[in-house]
Image (cartoon, rainbow, N blue to C red; front, side):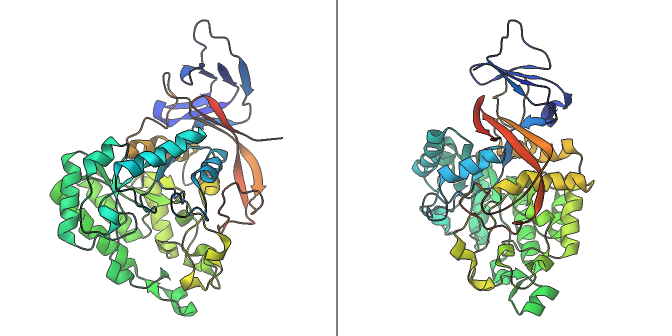
Length: 427
């Protein structure tokens, strides 16, 4: 139906809009007016957004939906419902499903499953190597034609540097973006947390900062050799981010993101073996966290993502080293980013940009903006509303988060996908 979103404060960094403006949406799901009604426009519904922020639907660069293969943890249906409840309208799904997304059929299956529910859009990443085994290259062009927005080997290392070079050359020949989780697997070994004072105190095997630094150095050398467009996923150390900044200064086509939880937590939050803080890459030192925050402020890190990894309760009940890593993070993405605004690290406009237009540009998808003619993917949230996160009020099937019991600012009240109401907060 024709919809008028009235009285809200519109924040649309892509179109340099940060003011109180009405938004007009036609019955085909497109924005037809910003601030001024098009001629003859008569809304069938008026949505009062007074006192709320109206912005493009959020774009999440990395969310594991657990389907296919791990449906006992979560499903596409359960997680897209959690996504729209969090204001997220576009998700990027890594290929480490079971079976792996290394064929066009698998890529199309993921998208068709998402279209069935009519909620958030899912853009899959294709596997860089067959079965993520790091040996034989996939048919990257066919994966791209099937809707994959990029290629990655996810968390599985490509240990053979020559295979990695050939993979980057192949991707560059088709102007595809490669998403890199850079880490030296031998330095990682059997580590489960940051190698430092806390790992020593707890007697847990550590993952040194050097594992990420060595991985990033190798990949930057290959990017310079091949000219491929690359995105570094989930950086965790200050020195690795500094290397990315220097590469960007030299003109290399590289970008980077960080997860929201890495911008707030450190190794000290693990306390006495809190498995909710078991993540990969690991939570690192306070100096590393401050380095990540400075990179966010400078723009070296262009996007903030959830790195959503829902688990069943038993996955976190094992001893720390044997528990499964990951955080259920869709529903904390917006509040944790708003906390950076509260801490004067970012302006609201900058924060919204890192959740909308910037990740959309990294993916190369038409999303994250609300200019005339844009698809009406819209997030409306009350910036002053506060709630305490509990297992009972989470929508995701995964309740594994270190932020349970914490008060969060910012509550999504409406999410529109293609002009249709995908989520509306009940009274």
